[in-house]
Length: 449
Image: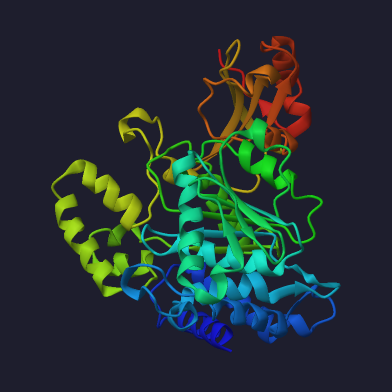
C-alpha cells in the first residue's frame, strides 16, 4: 500500500536521522512505530490500525489529480510527500477496537512553514471525508476572515474539477464562499469566519482551524468543538505557520503538544506534526530543510533568495523568521518586556516545597482588570524559589482590554488563581490569603523591621 509504505519509510527515516526534522516529529514517529509494531496487539491498548479502511482512502486519493503547480494534472497519490502520507495514514488508519468507524485521533496539529502544501493536504482529507463519513455530514474551515477561510474551498474545488472521476460527484456553488456538496453522501463543506456567537449551533464532522497562529482566543475553536459532541467521528484539525503575535493561542497549543510528546501529559488522541528551524539555523540551509519538509528544490531556492534580502530589510527579516523558518515571534519589541519569556520558562519547576522555610511575601495590588498577585519566596544558595497566586474579578475575564493569553479558569483549577465575583478586587480575601500562608505551606514569614 503506497500510503502506508511511505508513512513507515518517513517514520523510520526521521527516527534514524536520515530525515532532517525536529525533535517533536521524531517523537511522534517513535510513537507511531511503537504503536504500529507493538502496542496495538496488547489487550490494554484501545486502538488498532485498520489497513482495510486505509485501503479505501488510498483508492479515493488515487482518483485525484493536482490542479496547479509543478505537479498540475499529475496523480496525487503517486506524488504525495512522505510526511503528507504519514499525516493521512495516522488520521485515517487508527481506529477504536470497540468501534472500527471511530478515529483514534480526535485532534491533529500541523505546524509548518508557508508553501508546504498544508492547504492541499487539508483539501485531500476533506474530500475523502465527504465521500466516506456518514450521510449529511458537515465539514467546515474557520479563519479570521472570509477570504482566508475560503482558500481551502478553492483548493478543494480545484482538485475536484481537475479529477475526472470526482467532478460529477460534487455540486459546487458558484459563489466563492458558497457550499460544496457531495452528491453521493449529501455531505457538504462550508468556509466560516471567526464569530463565536454564530458558530455555536454548528455540528461539524471535520473542522479545520486554519492559520491558528493568528488567533488570540479559543472562543471560536471551543464553540465548534462543542458542536461536535453528537458527531460519530469528529476531527478538529489545526493548521498554521508561525506569526509575530505575542498573544497567539499557538504558544499554549505548542506547549501542550510538546508535553504530550515528552510523555509529561497523556493524550492518546492528539496527533502532532511540528516543523520549525532551530534558532541557530535561521540563516542556514539546515534551517530551511528542517522547517520545510516538502522537498521541492525550487521552493528552497526561493527561500535562499529571500533570506539574503531579509539580512538587510528588517520587515523581511520578520517574514523570513516566521513564514520560512516557522518560528513564533512576539508582536512587540523585546525592550517592552520585563522578562524574556523563554528564559523565564526554563526556570519553571513542577512544585516548590516551602515546608520549614523562612519566606518573604510580596504584594502587587490592583482594583479592577489588572491582576492582583501575592508572591512568596525563599533563597537557597544562588537559587530563588517562588510561587505566586493571582486574584482577579470574574467580570474582567472577557474585558476587551485584557491582552494576556492566559486561561484563568484553568489556572484556578490548578489553585494558581482566585476568581472573585463582581467587578472589583475584594481586599479582605487578599488579607485572608496572606494570613493563611504559614499554615497552608508550613513555613514562617520573615518580619522586616
